[in-house]
Amino acid sequence: MTKSYGKFVWCELMTTDTEAATTFYGTVIGWKSRGSGIPDRDYSMFTAGERPVAGLMALPPSAAGSGAKVGWIGYIAVDDVDATAERIKAAGGRLHHGPDEIAGVGRFAVVADPQGAVFALFRPSGAGEGPPAHDPAPGHVGWHELSAANRDTAFDFYAGLFGWTKADAIDTGPMGVYQIFAAGGVATGGMMTRHEPKIPPAWLYYFNVDAIGAAMGRVNDAGGKVLNGPMQVPGGGWIAQCRDPQGGMFALYAPDR
Image 1: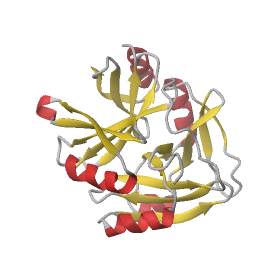
Image 2 (image 1 turned 120 degrees about the vertical axis):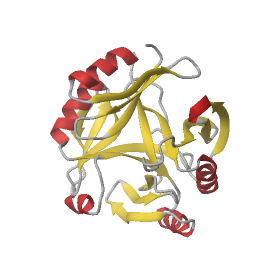
Image 3 (image 1 turned 90 degrees about the horizontal axis):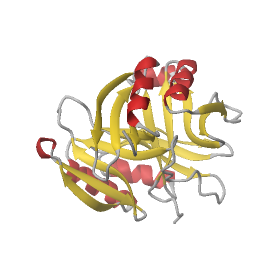
Image 4 (image 1 turned 135 degrees about the vertical axis):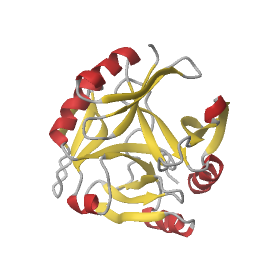
């Protein structure tokens, strides 16, 4: 089993306007962009400094025709993409794409958990461990949050599949319990039962910034929308949930207001 097994190791945006998305996230998060060098596809990478932290590609017409929307997707490292995809199907989940090979990069599949939340599986080529799983610095993906139809059964699914363990459970009052989970002993995200039943289960990805107020201002100035926040969270940090100009949902985390 690799050291990255069960951890989020990549995040990727599929959008209808890659040029506009590059400008927007460069303004809001401070990301630069560069080509991936993958010969058989038009794929860019967002970078924090010189380190690649996320991917960017156009939403394929075939995917849009099948109901795919603009949005972010997280990749979780596994040892065997094909076998894990079969386990997900056997547990009541779905296989949306793949398994497929990216030459010189790795093997992946796009799947959904039994409640419908979409994510991806990834196994790097060769003996590499893939990108770093967690970095608290600005510009990196800092948190992974699942809004589930049922938090308890969702946790059981992911724990059984990836070995995730429970960390703190936070009573948020009318919003219910927020269950923090750990991957490889490191708290990396949280789960909650969604408050609005009409909103489908989904993963939300938080990007680290220096200060929440200034970042929220950049979201609005760049044509996005702040949907919720700022809110202070246990530990003293601040968050905000947002939507980019093409409709992609994302969130911000900062240690300061």
